[in-house]
Length: 410
Image (cartoon, rainbow, N blue to C red; front, side):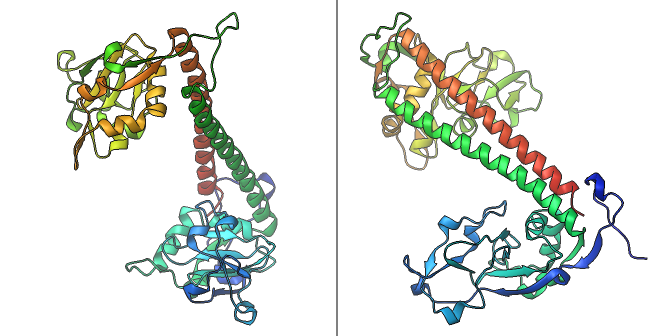
């Protein structure tokens, strides 16, 4: 008796049915590579668009606006033209990456390194788009990939893939449910991008003083005053914390210089690293300090400012510490937005870039009154908090989808 495979997570109305183990070829009507043509045939006014591997996202969405046009003879492409619902599978580099084609106002064909797959009526193309995102499918595909300078999945091997396929109604319900999850992900991602663009634009206006905040009585604050950073701040450095000093559940939270431009934004509250070094071996934050790398690989990396919000965080070596009576959150936003290029130009070196407090002290800044600094800092922090909420929602939804892919397919 043939072994039956049951997924860990199913819709209740299908629990009494089994998946049928078959070869993928049994649900394929026809398939074939896209045509080969000369690169000179690409033409922004061409009569056809040709889908490449880079035109399909990792979640199987075809980026129609990115697909290039080509001028090709109609008789040359007629057998390759994609129809609504066809699968497009990439057979090189990201082997097995699969999208579902939806009819557009111009003909589309797969590239020479992609396969068009037309399915039978008993199969849902959207279901299989998601199936090919699962570990089960990827492991199978890996068995057929020819390893070379660039990985290659022969089109003739695609029908040999073994799958455990549910009934068409169950396929359709799974496809609908996962599509809804992807729609939610897309909405969250777009909302986050819009908020990030708004933040970028409003920061430019604030630091150009095109947008001004008002006091409690609705009056304008005074003019911003130009000063040198060295006139209003004191500079110091952290103490070295090596990679070997990092421990998962250490006594002191700590920040190492490389983490500043890879893990943190303008404010630092929750840190990712800990150490058990003794207090006398460390420089601990008092809260409100602004830190900037003292060394790095590139000038732009080194021109990265963050404000440490909490006391007791160990500040690693190769970090400049700026202490002033300014609002540290305001100062970090201001330096990153209005002064990043100037700070980058102050740095020195070639293979390793250095930034010294002597150079930072010469930096000219324009300072609003403390009350306006506080309002600007609170406004921008609130924006970042909203962006962080969206980031967490995206991460949670991606984790949810990953769990569904693991449990709904066998």
